[in-house]
Figure 1 (spheres, one colour):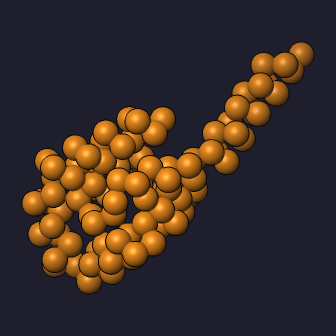
Figure 2 (figure 1 turned 45 degrees about the vertical axis):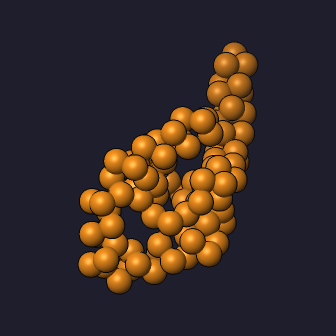
Length: 98
């Protein structure tokens, strides 16, 4: 779970950085988001994981182009745990349903 998303984030950092840097420069909202990720990265990544606005893979690449640290990205990834726990519980309940 975490290794794959961190790998996508690192790829995004080195492959798409220039493309997203131009978008961030042009958009006031993206500049504010970039600043917030630099300051409170783990908390914001956790909120992103709790509210699946877009597919995580696309988000991982895009976040790689921001100034969030790899450490904050990794820690924020644990925001997926509540969803995983619920999905495991529901899957288990369905499989035990007779």
